[in-house]
Image (tube, rainbow, N blue to C red; front, side, top):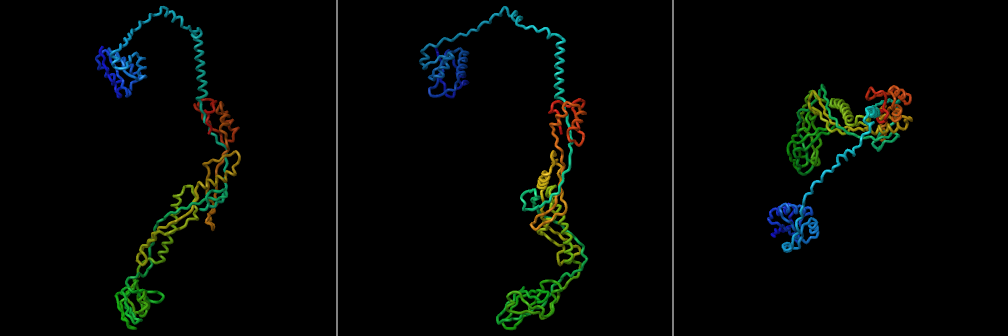
Length: 495
């Protein structure tokens, strides 16, 4: 009989082999397993391929030496051959016939058996009174559960309270590293920069230098060698007020003893102060003074002053003294805004530091009727943090707390008493007034146990007689029309 041989390859799977079976046109299909390659076909795939071959009207056979494939194929009734020649030569097993079993006939006594299997209901269950009774019991149980879990109560208690206050001597220093019960606390430093200006009207009259004095300086040679006198050589007067002049030209003094030369000079500083009498100039700056002497054979003239409204040194000092307190106040405000709201500034440690800028307008020597001073100054100060003061206050107060009381953490307040003082070591000493509220301890569990299942009126009386309260307790029931407090503890909230 004609046999279609299909050689499998390693990349074949169920889909590809099934498609190749569909192209077979012979009554027998033989799948040949490769010797040295693995085909990814599962046992269930063999069953599917067998069913597909039967659908095509063909028998399926295998040629393989793999023991697991041979075992699965024999289990499904698929013939396995050693070679394609053996498959052509040997007989193939006959195809099993599958016939559908006929339906079993109905049992003749099924209706009777069904009737006998039914259990008749007890007569009392069909009684109306019994049904009503069971209904009432269920409703009662639901109401009992609601009575336990639906009501809710909130109780507000105001315990007895008292004030606790004390005055603590405090020593704040940058050398302190921690808070101690003896009052030592760390001090922190802060630096700010304050800038401001101050103006003042000027009415005083001052002499403002206008022009520079000029004259002649006579240089006399004290040696036998030539002396060069460069332009810009400084000569000056000897006396209470030194006036300096500079030469205007390069000059050569011949090397003969007592030889002299006249050189034009101009005052360095403008004003009438440069108008000097004869022989007032007698000194020379620099190395020229070792070889020559100088004098003025004629008075120096031409220096003039203008008398006008101009700020004097007293005016500048007055504006300076007015501006400094303003800057210090501004610096203090800056520091308080920078540190915490409850931090304590040690005002006695506020000090003026470096003057960054100090500008007068008009400057010294200039006329003007309005003097304006602009200054930028650094200020530094020390402060104590609120957390350190709170730690100190709580440590001292907790040592003196009465039995049965607890502190209200939100009621603690402190303030500085008197003026702080600074000792030689740099520590600031001051007194700190501390105050807080103590409330009597109340056991919420005890209060809960006192009122469970009572009416609100009776519960209020029991709470007032059993607990240290400052005022009558407040009880809020939900729903409001419910007559008793809950029996279950967690349905009662005590604040």
